[in-house]
Length: 364
Image 1 (cartoon, rainbow, N blue to C red):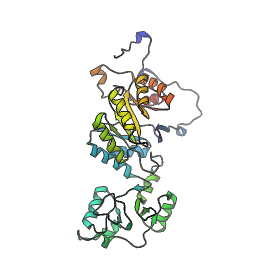
Image 2 (cartoon, rainbow, N blue to C red; image 1 turned 45 degrees about the vertical axis):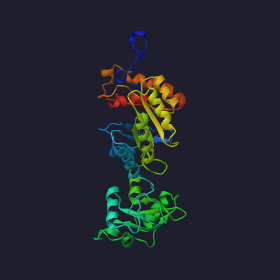
Image 3 (tube, helix red, strand yellow; image 1 turned 90 degrees about the vertical axis):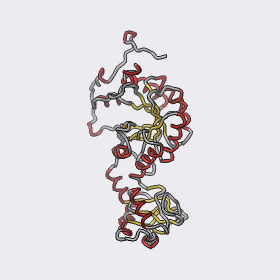
Image 4 (spheres, rainbow, N blue to C red; image 1 turned 60 degrees about the horizontal axis):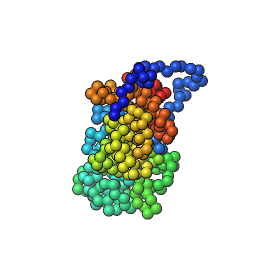
């Protein structure tokens, strides 16, 4: 049964507007401030900000920008599962130390096939592998590479890839190559792509000049162990939510957000437990809750991070329509007190009207 908050009982509940941060002595200059945080498991953010899982806010473009800036974007779930998974792939492939399992093509494919792949994936080079067929993410023994330079003046759509590709003096590297060595080889041979091969000579990755340049332009970007931008995506509960979660994990999502209006409900707790079993590497952020009990329930279910906020958003009508909620600052403080006992992160969701509110949320 819902509990009615009455200030007359002595329980004080606060919003951001009710408080100010009291200044004190400091020896730290603003430029020296370190706001790095660990959102869940091994996912660290240089900027402690997530973009909302709303269809008017976060799709692949913003998720890329957020990760480049040091935060992370949560791709909304108003896509079909397949479309949302493709959005995640766009983020993961946009900037990487190495493109894992790159798009490849076979020697008997046509120029038309190759150009179609280049347009579809916005790429300028395709490794050519045995049994690569007309293109896709197929692993095979490397026999050449096809780049824009090879096809620039080709005019016959039916011409075979093996007639156009570069096959001699291919520069390849092993899987454990570091970025400095990759840059040296790219410069030494005046090339823009290095194909990564395993011990059997199979193409397993691709390193490009463009990815290295992007990495240098965004030194604080949020990246995984393979140098790819981090991506988060929202899902729901039930079988549909579970199917969506499976697709997102297959696409390479780093943070799975079980996003509901009332996170302290059994179906949400069951969804967290079920999703947690899908992968050992994907982290679970679940919510929303507004109480210590709700926070603890999600932690017990397996959540790596908890999202707090019921109705504080500027366009949210939950409090008006349903009469439900807890003033946001108090909700954050009670959730943090509980979550810190388990070293679980808390995300404040909503109620930020001014930049000062963000500082208050971090302080809470």
